[in-house]
Length: 489
Image (cartoon, rainbow, N blue to C red; front, side):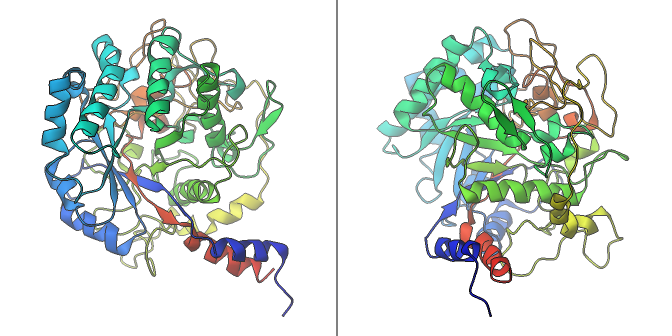
C-alpha cells in the first residue's frame, strides 16, 4: 500500500495529541413525554459524548441529576431574579439556594444571569444586568466557588448594524452604557461573552448554501476584503467587530445557542433531518478544528447546540418543536457522531415510514455541488411583509434591511425566560426590540427582530426556541474517521 498522504500524516499527528472541544446542547423541558432528569443525565453520561449541558433555570431535580456524571452545567438565574442579584444579600442568598446544595458534586461551570435581557425592553432589568453579574460573581467567590463563571446570553439583536461584519456595532445608547462595562467584567473575570447566532433565521432559498456552509461563491466584506462562505462565521465576526470597536476584542466569545430544525411547515425548503444533520456536523467540525473565523483565526468557541429534545409542548410553528437532536424516547433524530457505538436514528427505525431523514446520509455529498448565490443586493423580506414558507427571511438592522446575500447575522430567537410568547415587538429607536418573559426559555422568533434587524414572520423565523444542552465531543472521534479516509486517498 502506498504511504499515507501528507493529510493522512497530519491527521495521525493530531490523533496523538490529547484534544477535545467543548460542544454542548441546550436541555429544555417543554414536553409532556420527556424522560426524567435522572434518566437524561445517565443517558448523556453513559451513551453519548456529551460533556456539557445548558439549563434554562436551576430546577433542583435537574441540577441534582447531573451529580457525579462528569458533565458540566451552565445554569440560568431567571430574568426576574436580576434586581435581587444586584444586591449583596440577594446574590448571597441566591448562591446559598441554587449553588451550595449541589456544588461540587454537580459541576456547575457557569451561571447565566437571565437570558437575552437586552431584547426584553425592560429598562429595569437592563440597568441591573451588569451590577447583578458583578455582585453574583463576588458572592460565588465569597462562598468558596471562584471557578464558577458568570455571563449572560445575547441574541444578535444587540447589533444595530450586522453586515458586513467589519461594519458591525452594538446598538446605539447601549454600547458604552452597557456593553463596555459588561465586556470589562468579562475581561477581568476571564468569562465568555455569550451570543446566540442562528443562520437558520437568516437564510432564504437562494442563500441556503451560505447558511449551511456548502460550497458557494461567498459574500464579500468590502471593509476587510474577506469573502465569507459561512453565515455562521460571518455572524461571529460581526460580534467580534462590535467588540473591537469598544477595544475588547480579546474577550472570549461563546455560542450559547445555535441549531437547525429537522422539520418545518410543508413545502419549506432547506429543512429536513438531512439539513439539520448537515448544519450540526459542520458546527461540530468547526469547533473541533479550532480554526476560528476569518477575523479570529485559531480561536475556539465553547458552543451549545439547540437543542437536546424535540419538545412537543412548544407553541408556534412546526419548527419550534423540532430542533432536537433526540426524540423523547432518546432515539437520535439523526446522527452527528455524538453517540457511543452504533446508532439507529428515529427516522431509520424499521417501524417508521420512510421520510426525508433517509437523506441524512447524503448530506455530506451536497458539499460537492456548487450553488450560485443570488445577485448581491437582493433584499430579504422585512418586518413589514411575511416571508414565504419556503424561505425564512434574513433579518435586518436598524439602519438598513439585511440583504439575503450578506453575511449579516440573524437575530436568533431567544430561549430565555419561561415564556412561550413569540410575538415580535416593534423596534423603537435605540431600545431593545423584543419583549421576552420573566425568566426561562425565551422566544427565538421574537429575538429575530432584534438581531440583524427586522425580521419576517416566516416559519423558520418563528420556529426555534433556543434551549441548548452542551455537548463536548472528543476530537479523536472526528479524526478517526478523517484518518480512515485519508489513508485511502
